[in-house]
Length: 211
Figure 1 (cartoon, rainbow, N blue to C red):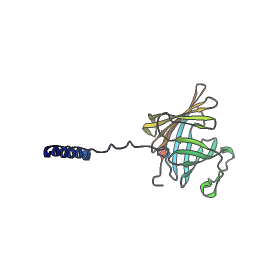
Figure 2: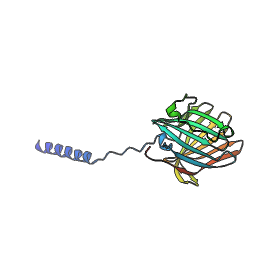
Figure 3: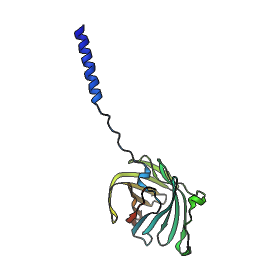
Figure 4: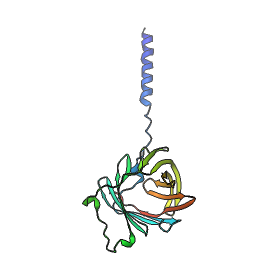
């Protein structure tokens, strides 16, 4: 009987020792849309363009408050104002208005709409969780899909690996591909319509950390 008990105790100790030595498998790191959409006061991205005189543009982000960011895009023909809402599940554009540069006076002041208030006029989801191949979502007049999460994109601003590739299919059959690099943002945009291609690619960028 003692021999049986000794064997049982020994077995328990061995199993317990093995269990104690077993290390938990670390969870794979997860990414969220905000990882590909850097927010910071005075962040700036400059894009060169091909295929259209307005494909080159400057995108700057002068105002940030809580989980919202206000940005401006100037392509030499139109000045656009966007407001984005950022959370763990999505990057959503909640406001957009565009004005022709011709009608924008030199003393045009970029108003802080996050402080002064605004009325939402848009609900376009730019990026959406889960960040994995095959994620699909619908916006007005378009469908977006993550078609790759490991695309390599070479630009004048750098060589970026593991980029998100987003395919946007518009109701008029125009296809747009957007490429986002973690910690950098949009690095390339390519629009294809009737075999005509317009490309915007990141030339340089400046990101302000800690905001």
